[in-house]
Image (cartoon, rainbow, N blue to C red; front, side, top):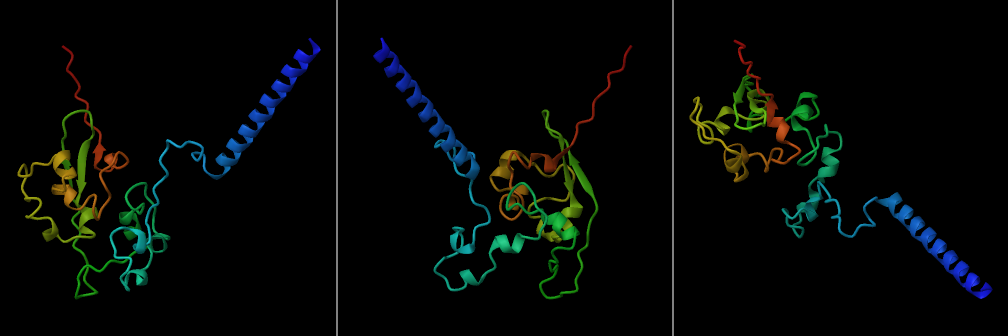
Length: 201
């Protein structure tokens, strides 16, 4: 009986030691990255890679490494939660960047059009507000009209499908402007639908 008791006591001790080792190893992995212990979770994608690793520039070209790395270039700009994680509109308005509005004339100023266009959408999503001001701070009217958008009420059929296929807003968004993702829906869908009050008889 005593030998049986000793055997099971030794077994309990082994289990306790193993459990302690497991807990300590998990704590160590949490200290570095809370997801390192889970093989099924994808690693977080690295953002704003240097040009030699971005898959766009030729890493063998001499001029590639002469370009300023994005992380360095974006370091002092206003942050956002999507795309290249830069809020370009706020960065412009806070004077952190000074884009040239004319290729030949460095003193040229933009013609800013302060006009919001509201597009009603079906379903429960808030309506879309298109702000001309944020766009005309960067672009000339001819960048969009009439090739992409006909400047006439009701003349443009816009859908999320067409945008995701790179048409209409998708000509820029997802390429040189913030992408269309779950994180960015409310940037455009920003006007709550008006509640229709039923008349009581």
